[in-house]
Length: 144
Image 1 (cartoon, rainbow, N blue to C red):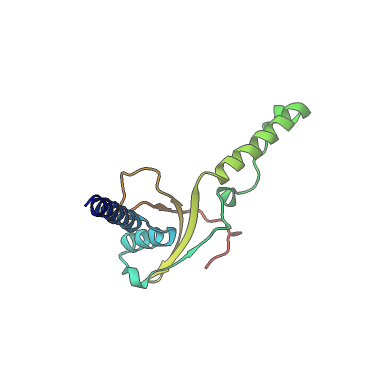
Image 2 (image 1 turned 90 degrees about the vertical axis):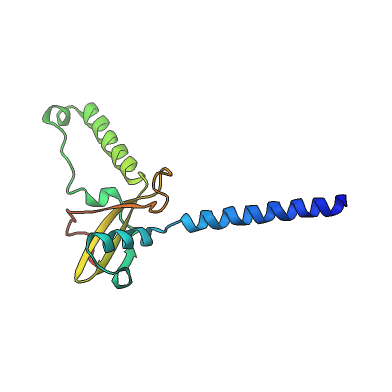
């Protein structure tokens, strides 16, 4: 009797864990799916007519046009210039490692590049990726 009760308890825990795992997987959404859903909704385009290409080579610094110049008083002082340049490099590194991912979507005669942020909270479990259109795309970034 004790053996049967232990086996039943183990089976029940296994079934519960399996159910939790399946629910968790159902809530997961890939970057491509997030960009596709956003494109479909924003452009009134059926999802089955939307293609998405992830752009892992893009980073926030990909959208920086030119290099900023230090103010004249800093440029004239070698020690301050070195400090300013270091701060600029560190800022770019932080921006490049900010968790943003890029994806390009096309369909229904339109192509859009998206800047997407992954899930950071449980407020929107049905749509964990938040994607917004990149409106100023430098010419240096290859088109689809």
